[in-house]
Amino acid sequence: MTVMTAEQIEHFLDEVFPQRMGRIESVGAMSATLRLTIDEQHLRPGPRVSGPTMMGFADVALYVAILAQIGPQAMAVTSDLNCHFLRAASGEHDIVAHAKLIKLGRRLAVGEVQIFSASDDTKPVAHITASYALPDSPTG
Image 1 (cartoon, rainbow, N blue to C red):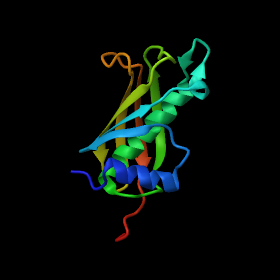
Image 2 (cartoon, helix red, strand yellow):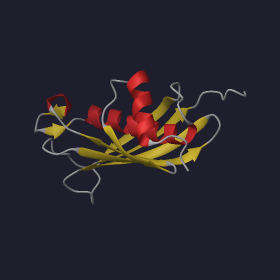
Image 3 (cartoon, rainbow, N blue to C red):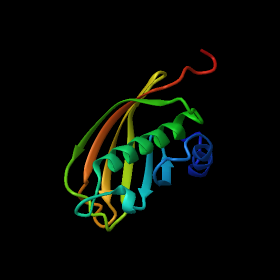
Image 4 (tube, one colour):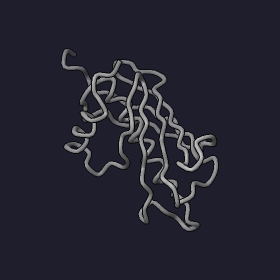
């Protein structure tokens, strides 16, 4: 069960992280799905979606999955991120991130993201794992 809806998270992010990439399509138990509309700033020659775009997008997707579980915590911060680029993502299509939390503890969250081109949801273009340091709870 989530403690924040996709709409609540969008409003929270508008306040604390307005420069984020993508829009939330859904949140669920230990998961989130986001979509990024690709434009010129996301491209490298080819035109292909750039690596930094995919890594940043994955980071946001996991942050959203965490917020859905723990509530509005601006200071849940990335402590590690590892990305494997599996194939080129065409710059002609949106990309979609499916984030899944593997562990959600008091001080640490660990998750993974698969990014797909919206034109083919059967073959991921990138696989990302990351961990987040979580802020102390108000009760200590």
